[in-house]
Length: 274
Image (tube, rainbow, N blue to C red; front, top):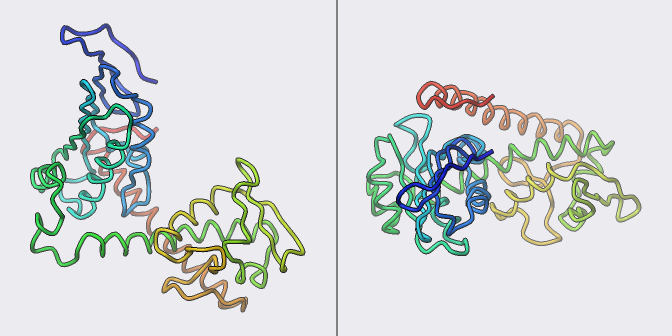
């Protein structure tokens, strides 16, 4: 929880820490709202919030001008990934009431100056990194596809644990899933409406977020699940289990990379994940 010190001579209030970052604020923009917005920004490789990963180093709020500084586990983290996070911070915070300007600073990174300047000047990634092999949207697409497939593992196992078999899961469409059933439960209709089962909501909601982002699920009639290449799942048990295993490997790969990054972040930036 944030602590509040007496106002300093400049009239600002200092908070020693909130969400593991230092904060200076005159309360012209709601701090909790900023934190909530930052929680929407993910490390695109790890598919986890920069707040959860403790990348946010500091937040300064002064008469509506918000400055967010962040730091990554290493100085050589992909500039494309860092750019996505920096633009995400800028765009999320800019939506807040009272925020008159947003400045983003990437600290202790080999391309920190280029990214900080480019993002704050609203330049394109391609104009800053002219030698990059892929454009930023192509990189984003690849990472979203990877995250979508990894999240699918949790969604599929949630349905299997509810007693559904491949014949019931493979034909599901978006229209078969009601995420509004309750705050923590989703209702899934199977067998042409003959049966409805309830399952944990979060795995399906998180999966659908990425399925929409990749264009896999855009309307109610779209198949819910697909293989790594985007092909609709087969209800054949062997084929289905092969996809489940493949998705599990994708999720394990992201988790493993996350563990490495956490270790590097602890060592380099003295963060505590306990």
